[in-house]
Length: 517
Image 1: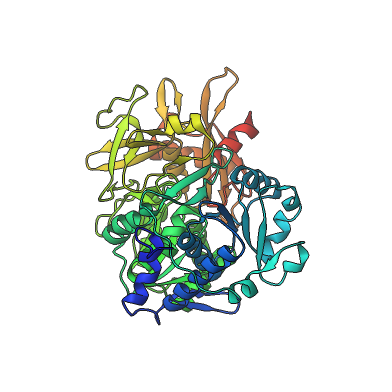
Image 2: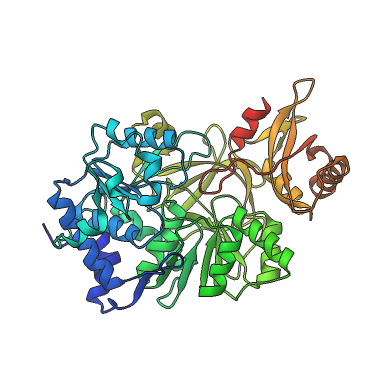
């Protein structure tokens, strides 16, 4: 089969055995039975997965869908597929059955690895998939699906296989985008991209070290979580904590207290929820070396409150599924809340107007990025490929302003609108709203008044105990006027129990616009 040259699994997994780190814990589960997986165990079991795939006739370059919770089987399957030259496709564990069916049909995978708890979400349509030949169930539900095999038993019965050689430019895995603007898209990534993110953001910004203990509330199926909880710690032989359940504020607080990770990786929505819960209890958290955020721009007020309460800055960063991880970020010692920071070493950034020309400082432009982890493209979406990937540059769809050495987020390209002929950034209005003590979360979209002119409308989730009455509406409008300008205030304020979000925590503003139409 080969010696694994160029295969990302050779460097991330088998290298640690060669360098005598096989006894060190790679992954520790922090719920359930609290299982752990050493680097030696991971090397052995991922090689056994090569044997399992070979024994069942799964061929190189075929796709294997992973509908797997954050548990120790996830890295075994992911790296084992890479070793075999099979393409793993990790999926969100939080989607609905019709969405899964659409993705399964699009990917045409021959193999499925699925956690038992998630099997009921996909079992209704598995028999309708002509490409699907093998189903491996992690847990005790294999008998529930005709022809399915118990993953643990199948792995134990397999001999170890060798890691195949692969080019760094060869497709290694797919991720499906979170669908913040609609239908998820299959994004194809290369072997070389995994190390590229570890050697740039992981090393040069996060400063990941062998003695770090990492907990990422963002899940492994999410590009952001894949780097945080797997490739970054594995790049240096550090330890990652895995939580199979949903990262609720109560559960995350308990995990941070029980395991005291040195690095915590969250998203803005979660940081807001953690602060609300801690404020209600009058509590804080153990000290951490570093906290990071991505998925959506971090409101400045959330960052300041977190630093004041916990004593650790949040490094707000910008990444995308298409670029695999963060390419624009604040840095330790250079945190500027309200701005997204500067380019991660190895990446280049541009702000361009609608004609593709560079914009001047202070003007709003779309962010383009060039870097070593760019996707090789979407699956089966030719027009989207042509509009997103332009030579070396990848269009992000995000609008920014340059303010000296920093970039300030203004919103998604399709979120901005004009009031009185002047561009309004929904994110600027949201930042003002969230700085109000009564506001837990909010989203701002364009709505039309009686004269069919666009004006800001705010959807607001209040802190527990706050009253969503007319007095609160008036107070919020006045607060925005005082904070960012009289003409930017929301003409309408709707109080809601929750905001529509993707499984990765991004607010789906298009749903708010559609509901208001």
